[in-house]
Amino acid sequence: MVLINEHYLKLKAGYLFPEIGRRVREFQQKNPKAKIIRLGIGDVTLPLPKAVVEAFHQGVDEMGAPETFRGYGPEQGYPFLAQTILEHDYRARGISLECDEIFISDGSKCDTGNIQEIFGLKNKIAVSDPVYPVYVDTNIMAGRSEQLVYMPCTEENHFVPDLPHQKVDLIYLCFPNNPTGAVASRAMLQKWVDYALANESILLFDAAYEAFITDPALPHSIYEIPKAKKVAIEFRSFSKTAGFTGTRCAFTIVPKELMGKDTQGNPVAINPLWLRRQTTKFNGVSYPVQKAASACYSEAGQKQIRELIQYYMENARMLRHSLENLGYKVFGGVNAPYIWLQTPGKKDSWEFFDQLLTQAHVVGTPGSGFGSAGQGYFRLSAFGSRANVEEAITRFSLLSL
Figure 1 (cartoon, helix red, strand yellow):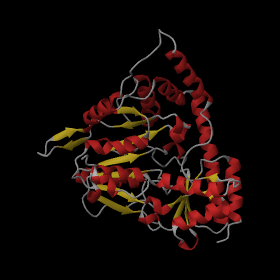
Figure 2 (tube, helix red, strand yellow):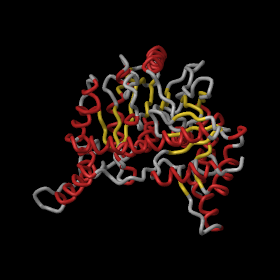
Figure 3 (cartoon, helix red, strand yellow):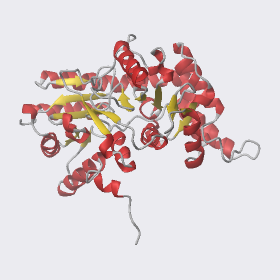
Figure 4 (tube, helix red, strand yellow):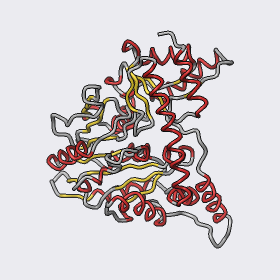
């Protein structure tokens, strides 16, 4: 008899977004004429920037010619993309890194989920509550369900977790935050770096939404904080920044200064472990996709990406302003593409989801799906089309609460 990994049985019955999809499908089958506006899953709606598409085509053309064809590429990514990332995203901000500290991948979701593989099962794992479900579920799959420590994020602490009262080993942080839209100041991140240094912890810093930061006082990278390279891994993505949700490209920074320990207490560098994991389990991102990603940093690509971001952030502004005028208590939507609203009367999150779907035909994400502290809250994404956002605002105004 084949035995299964019983840790999978400890997971909730369904991953949050498939459950949303199931409920929407059931409603659509019963109401085929209903026009559903989807502001739930954070998928982008605008097409890839023109500069990116042109580079993509060029990459495909190169794959069709004998003299420029490429087979297996380096699992950690082509140097041309890594070097471009380092110059524009890090050295431009005064951050010194090397090419072999960057790992190109097919998504931040994959990397934030897979990174736990290189760490021992006895580590205490701290996550925010509410939390992006991947951080929790992948650790449960690995057998750490008893090792998770939840850090409540509430209106009282501005949805930024307080430092743990106990010693923890790995700490997932996400800023700008998914789902709450909260951002972290330099002083806040300094406290986390100081904690990690004092407790020999490692910060797993998800910065997938950093491009949506417009406040010049807010840091875009954890490495803007002194000594952060000694305690932090950073995850970045092209998905929301440049519309790569269906194209798949991201990267993770693992500094050489970052160390863990073996069971004997000897220091072990983390960078070679992640390299070993990636070269064993991952064959790399395709050449045309990396060629397209590099175009994000061209002059034309940067301009076109700024226009994408401005479009989505105007959606966020409209949603936040309109919902506030309707009497909702609203958070996020500034320096972040997510609106985090309190459900009317602190109604159950899934109850409000069903009401919004059936009465207004609008899909959002129940806050309780992100953790117990999300109960009574609801997330809306600003990644819809302008017409759909405007229509959703109208429908909210007609909702009977």
